[in-house]
Image (cartoon, rainbow, N blue to C red):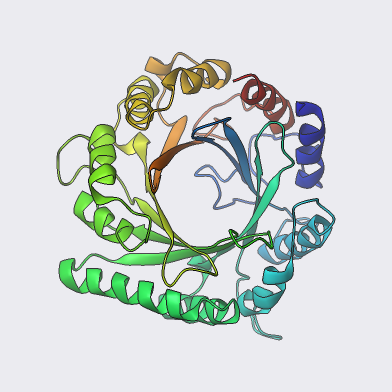
Length: 355
């Protein structure tokens, strides 16, 4: 079951999937804190786990540049048109919104891709535009234009007003950082907007999450407390909020809150305990997460910190899900002995399928 999707992952990561990782990254990517251009996460919810690999396509130029990466990303997006569940219709409506104008000497807006796979199903794909390369005022204008083109302008306006009200109330900056699309034509396909919250206040995160229709305040508050404890300023470094929009909703439909769990724990053993408690809170089996950790941890969990970097929580009516985002030791200063991604990815896929 893992064979075809493993081959697909390696194919999508080319032209750099077969290049030895080496001791320095050829292009420091924003995807990983050490510059490595790929990230793995696993979503735990009712049913089988879902493996996601987020990555930045690297260009073939030497040296690799932001512009060559953008060209490689466009080519990869075109290739995805042949995948079973992929539609580029919505991408085609907004692609030029996030492209620099002709002749402008601007750093291109990065484009990342994500493959999401549940055993027994073909992969889903997502696409992300990194807004962090442009001025804050321009970010809002770009997202507004894109949402208008997607027919979600009123829903975005309503949500953006809620974000502004929160900022006016507590004075905390909510930085618009990413815009993303499900590459799917179904009604359930989402446009997603990511904010970086410049605070560790749980109250701010609750306000942001409350902008979504499906948010359940009492359940989310209980989940946050389970992961973080009861302190009102316990959310760690720069937590994120993702607000998801669907074409049939009058506002944000779902919210996900991302906690940098490595900033609030002393080791990956402590992080695993907190994540396990959150999974149990949501009716999920924490042993599944522990089994995956045993398979991929480079050292005993009580001796390392940061393998489990982010944890996200999303409430969906009467169902929640928990996602864990991993940071593998690739480049210094994390490790002096990096491991190549292709070998790592194959083993991880087999572990996820077995859970």
